[in-house]
Image (tube, one colour):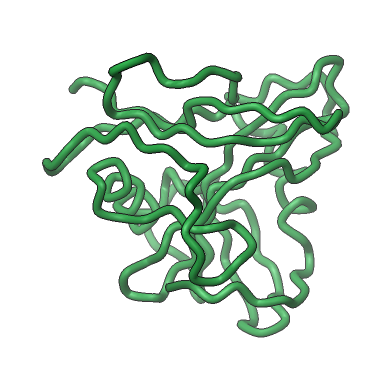
Length: 192
């Protein structure tokens, strides 16, 4: 199980995302510099204990209407080879672990493998800010066993539960700037 360290990161994850997010093709904000607030998310454990895995929801409060984004991230002790340049969100100095290379999780093979494991019912979502604590608010309408699932991560989140009886959906929540709660589909299995 992953250990959550109570320490500093310089720059912070929100500072890194503020510069990275507007450069993404799926960014729908109307400000060149978003005003990001952490709004939710969860973690997954790397079975090897090497990669930190976080699915963070940030809300851009600078937009005319607040927009919620899902950013899966992989935290690594060294650079990840053979990934596109846009995959690197940035580097940060962690107060306990030293330099961390932070990658967009859709380009990190450990992050994507654990997301697939979660959808197969083979991984347990963990609280975002507590060590060794499952997060029961994350609901998996599992795809069942099988290799090679194609998974789509919903980058821009919209409030909606998974359809009744649907499978292959990962549903979780976040909080809007006004304090109201929302839930939506974070990721879904897609047909090949």
